[in-house]
Length: 118
Image (cartoon, rainbow, N blue to C red):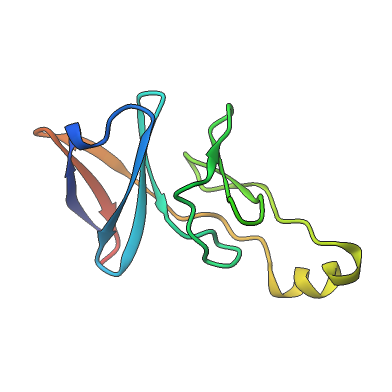
């Protein structure tokens, strides 16, 4: 694991988000209610981007594609995609619940840093 400087702290205003590239990963940085979060910008379900996902009052990001929800602090699955009865059993085999990767974030010397496995 190593720390990577990704942005000036001023570049991520309150209640904003931005995708940054660290190595081969797209990481979604969020400034939510004055707290910084860094998560993989791909829902573990089908790897679709999370950037436009809604943030809930209890601090979860909701996939805009399939409504799965993940805790911003831990990546824990709060809600997993549900399927109609006819396809549900088959899709549950293909689409097993997976946590959202989260990354430690810090602000130092006016910059935002993320710790990512290289």
